[in-house]
Each structure stands twice: as structure tokens, then as C-alpha cells.
Image (cartoon, rainbow, N blue to C red):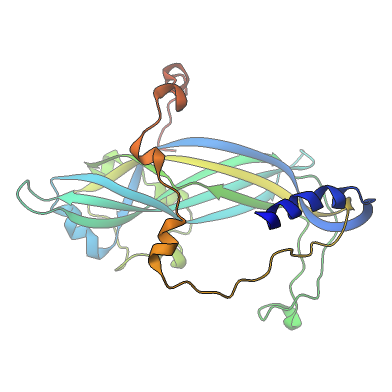
Length: 284
């Protein structure tokens, strides 16, 4: 406790020092957007290992979903200086519980679904090429290749929520894989057992996912920032290993929230007007 008080007392002393203006090379975010997308009726594609399971299933339910990969492409918009088109292609790994018959155990199957979208963001302008001495084996002459003038797009994605999964006829499901252009990338296919082949002509699965994401456009710039001092660690590295599990357990806080759930006025309330006022989303 004494060490904590000393650190807290030292903080104002550091802040009182005269700030020095230093030039820092940082990545500045020029524009960003946050989206809450309802991905309705996404076609799920299966490998030869799980295709037979789905073909014999009487019904399916969604067990979970995760984002395997996101392909991001940034292109300039003609006649709109400083604005860029960010094309996003999401690849999801969906885990399904296939029910063959009521008396048989549930069989787990994994499939891949694709979603594409586009957003327009401001990324400013740059007319220079950047070369660095950073070493990369795949770079030219062992150095890192030059950076183009386009800004860098960054996508942050929360774990998607699987809202619905159901069997359907292939003609009733959108071919979302065609929107992805080059099909399923190798790094995504390696996440599945078996090989992806032509979908079954008689049985298909479509899912509805809820996705929260943030897209940013950033560019490397040099900026003057105030600097007070170097960040010298004030804590010593602890090399002690406590093998007593009871001592480690005593340091864990008692999970009060697990035993006493919050009241309705303490949690986020459901706003029906806000939810049902949103525009319905289609398969595109």
C-alpha cells in the first residue's frame, strides 16, 4: 500500500516538469465508422466431411460463430479528393448442431459463410512513397517494400452473434460466395477439415448473424507532442513463484454479480422502438 501511495504522489511531481515538444511518427486516424449489421440469410458452405451430415439432418441449430478472416481493400474514389472506398469481405466459421432424428444424438458440423460490404471514409491525401530500413526477408534486397500513398484501413470486429439457422432449398439461399470473387482463401480453408466442393443440390443451410464492427482509416504522420520524461518502470520484476493454490485462490475477488444478478434499472433496457425502427436487411 505504501508503494502505491508513493507512486500516486510522484505522478503530480512528474506532471509539473516543463513539457518538451518532440516530433513523433504516429498513425493518425482520419476517419472511422461503427456499424451494427444484421446479416440475413447467409448461405453456409460445407466441406465433404460435413456435407453428408447436413444432407441427412432433419433440422439444425446454431451452436456458435467466429470470424476467421477479413479481407480489406482500399481504393481511391474518382472526383472525390481525400475519400476512399473500403471493401470488406468477412469469412465466418459457423458451428451447427445437426439433428438427424429426435432419438439420435446431436452431430456437430462446421461451415463457412461469406459477407461483403463497402464503406466510404475520408483518408486525406498523400503523394509520397515511404521507404524504411526495416528488414523483411520477403522484401526487395532484404528491406521492407515501399508503402503506397493510400491510407491504411483497420477493422475491429466483435464476436458475431448467431441469431438463426435453418435448412432450406439451395434456390432459396443467396450465393454469397460469388460476391467474394476469388472464393474461400487458403488460410480460411485450413481452418476446416476436408475440402470444399460444389454444394449439395438438394439441401442447404442459411444463417442470420449479428455483427458489430469499427472501421478506421489512418495515415502515418509526424506530429509535435508534449513529452515530460522517459517512462522508467517503478515496479520491480517479481521472480517468486507461489506453488500454493489456496494462496492464489484467496486473491480472487468474490463473484458477487454471479450470485446477485443486477436489477432491471441497473442493466441496459430493451428499446423496442429503436430496434424495430431499423431498416430490414437483405441477403446482400
